[in-house]
Length: 377
Image (cartoon, rainbow, N blue to C red; front, side):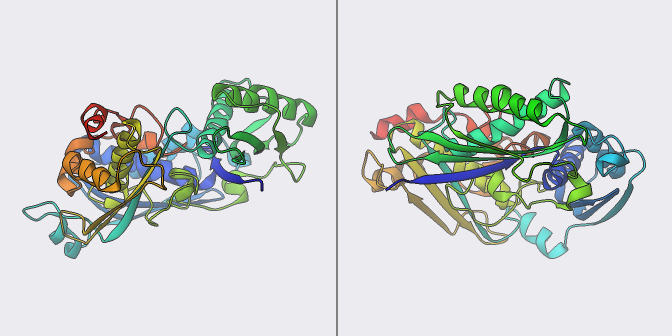
């Protein structure tokens, strides 16, 4: 029986990702001036209209409208013809301060979680980043396509793009790419044959070869025939609507909480980063080939209520040893997560596109615990 798994990603020009970037840009702008800012920022975009709402408590003086227009320009939405003009679109700012009921739990003697919830982290020996192939390749496709568009060499392309990658796991020891689908917004007067040839040869094949995988996969490009109307002109966008794109492409479980626009006291974000950090180091240390970690929190409480580990029968040592290694090397209390991963710095805009995991620049991707964890083998 053949076995397939599929993940998708979207470019920075996708309406939902546009919102994530605006929310995280506002978070970073607050943290640049006040590292103790409390931010829960939500954005909505549609044709020539942006709404920013949520709760922000900060000493920072931030021009929120200026941040919105800056990101629109950065993504290359340049005029009304693209669905949103960064200079003339309407921007509505509706922000209030954090609820005192929440602040009471978060700002006590011991830093407590900003809400209840469950979070997951995952790592697997597939891509070099210890991410599942399907989501890593999907990210790489739209990332490369966007870079080529910005460099001016991807003719006819517009900012809104999506990718979808189907991996063949019939032979789990030798997975291959079965299908790559890309939907790329383009100019109305484009050369379809030239456009599709460029995508296959300069994007799809390049990414497949980068991962040492096959290039004889099935190809789907703009399956409806054209994709002229896109971005906010074609679809409204919301912060936090791409949580599977942001994490593991559906390959691992998800607790349901979104990331963008939230400061690190929101464990939806920070604890998910810590779970990835722990899972990645344990897999890299050779204790398992796949690992998923779940934690749960109560609002106002510093430490998790529970920690659960699943190795999917790939563990190289007994599971009680993996639990021991996890408990002795990783502290999931809220303050320790923030300190360990250095999450008071304005680094969050860079997470808001092409996934929050698998990028070596981030603290939760470092492999500084591998030597200590290797002792448990």
